[in-house]
Length: 408
Image (cartoon, rainbow, N blue to C red):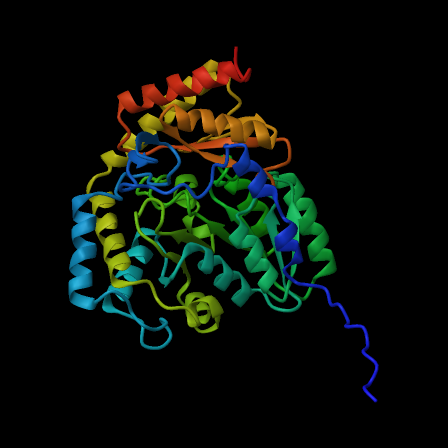
């Protein structure tokens, strides 16, 4: 006699949420999907997308170095000398003399004792925060901090607390409460120097004053500040004259330095500790020779041609003034990141598509990258945008803004 068949047990399918998630498909079906559009050209101030030339105001190429001949020549020469990759982590076989030279140069630029180069800026925050914040410690972050800071906190064994965006008074309230609950553990406040979506600058003087009074260490993520702010382009702390007061500064190579990678600078002993504890460094391949050489070349140009930063600020002020006079809500930006607040997500997608169809490529930021109801078009500018390009961008955005009812 054959055994009776039992009903097969049905288990939950992990991928079910993937099959049922249709948000992106809905936006694509409407023809206003703004993400993952491929470039058919180099990523300069003018690009080719879908066979049409467009003015690029969506990149972070602040100093306009991504296509500089000396940067490309340095990258090509490094490939010829060192090959295409390092085939290992910095911890083991993947450290080149290029990496060491780059760390020495960046430490000098940032006026700190030591520097450590990571594979990406994102991995830098992951590694630094998770290495330093242990059980019993606390990290306090701005509510609008970059996702890499948030994820670094998640990977740590300490507790994370948030304060209202760029609100020193709320920071002090949170810090006072945390210190009252956590008298034995260490505390670090971690903030963006320039916030990547809104373009506003952290109130670093107040943050530093409060943190020092409460015995709290300070980390500033200067991804969008290095090369842009400060007399020598050393970022937010230099801009405010607070280099000696900021304990750690994180930066990236994918913005002003026209390459890929990240770094952290600080006291020698702290950097040495991170070097031996940061899992995202130890277990990742080091940045390829071409990327390191490109950063060194970009750093040479940045220091030899301070007029690039002057051109960047001239272009930035022109755009900010034009958009404010037109009546756009561009928030509190004081940087080359100039947002246009649209409101609802779908309105932002539609606004983006009309810009795209009129020869301007910008970025769209919706929740959770920004607060709900504050969806925006994120525009950003470089030292090498021409007046003609900027005038065209202003004209197109004004025309679309009027048609959409954002301005009169």
